[in-house]
Amino acid sequence: MKPSGPVARRYAKALHALAGEAGRAEAVADELSRFAGLLDGERELREVLAWPWVKAATKRSLVVAVADRLGLSPLARNFLALVAQRRRFGLLADIVAAYRALIDRAAGRVRARVRSAAPLADADRAALRERLGRRLGKLVLLDTEVDPALLGGFVVEVESRVLDASVAGRLRALRGALIKGAGGAA
Image (cartoon, rainbow, N blue to C red; front, side, top):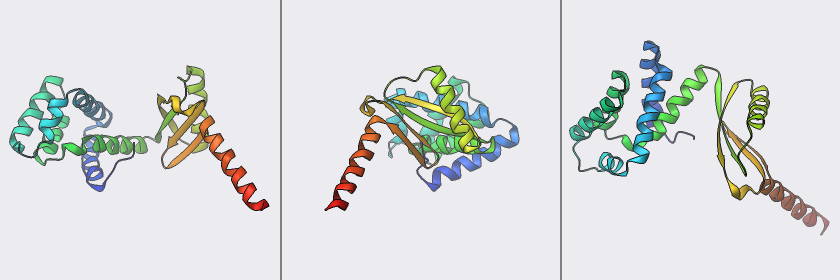
């Protein structure tokens, strides 16, 4: 996932600086992901945090209570409270993605999103991770998902690049080549 804006990146950079100083960058990322995961499953909480007519102080109190119940660190709790206070909870997923990207960059890692027609076997995942790592010169973390629309093969999205090794992608390329060839013969 690519963060969608400069505001999310600013929040992520500020948190990364604080968490890095405390030596808790990875732990805070996990805590933010846990909180975001809870939000994904709790529609009512998500809506209350998004409603503009709910007072910022109320949102802050609610976020602090949820963070305490989840056992989040003071740094993560206070950061989430600040995001609530400033009415930026709609950006939380983007902030978490931008924060993870900063951590990965600092650690020499990159995340690759892999969509495949069928679940990848562990050996296939390892081989793909290793080949991408050699090509990019970085440690590659794979996020996989199954997409039956691909018919077969897989599509890898890493940084700003897309590698389409799917049957659907190959058929599109073949169609394009045939159209181009037919256009040149006329």
